[in-house]
Image (cartoon, rainbow, N blue to C red; front, top):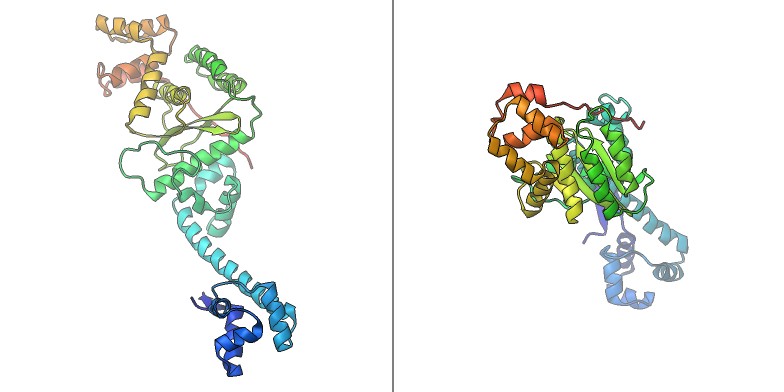
Length: 362
């Protein structure tokens, strides 16, 4: 290891560099110099090579041996440490800028009110970092940084990892602002049944569900999708509460309610993590079954299938009988290949589209 470090035309000298010069000028061997300094040859060798920091004890011994001040040697070590920290910070900033390239600053500006900073990359990065409340954006490149990654269809790129982690981070920060009692699973189960009664109340369901969930210790957050995140939702324990996040990738009534109840299924099953689009594993299958059976009672659905009458009127009648939005029934029929996804007529008449309005924070 060298007793000096160079980076971007700057150089930092370890105190061992200067000690080596003094040993050479003294005409002594390193072993003899160590004896005079009242330390071991091994200790002096590590110091000369820059492999350990200068201790106060050695600084005192050097000052006595050479007639210098203790502060002189300690300041050399301090100056070296400061430059090394600066070099490390510069390297980390370069890596952080690489991570930042995965993001569109407009997302944070438009959705969360961050300042408009055209062509000011460093200021944009700083603004996003502070908004997300992290020391560096590099932390988002770590899989499972915020919550476990469930199975994802295809290879998980670093860009996917960063974007997925950031979406969860935003949701967690929202959850931390919410004052809610400790999570109560039994109470939450009752609240979930209440949520089922709201599928047709398109203009008012969100605040009703959000407040009801909060009373059982579940913080419900809907976020605008960060392009390229590849996720539908996530669940995570946050302190004594549980975070339930979905994004607006699926804004039609059928896909939204299925995504919501899929995430509820994960909470009920006690497996927290991120749900990626098109994922396929046992945990996802279990959450799918939970959502299907909760949204449409299985026995009644099978009876409806036996009629083989999937006209608009029939779908509306069945949906009304189970007190569900007809778009949910249509979505299930399409997923079960009873009605083609290309049937745009039914989609236009039965599927309700939601619009998510983000509350700005800046």
